[in-house]
Image (cartoon, rainbow, N blue to C red):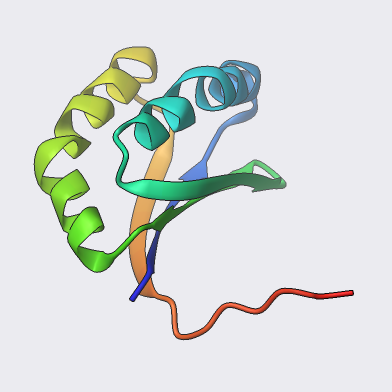
Length: 101
């Protein structure tokens, strides 16, 4: 069963430009490079951001959390030591739907 790992960030206006640059050109690519995820999305609304990572399996997510999370979080906090509020959730994917022509 696939799972999604969602990280939500509340970003003050003074960090928006740097945060978007870092996430789009470094962090998300680094997360995907671990090989545990098959895709990611980066979304925003009114100073709030959501990064959604689709794991290949719950085992893949467990391996990511055990092996790579701290390294990538440490890098994030080197760039943004304070001021950005983060929350994380893990969702089991019951079913995925796609439009077909």
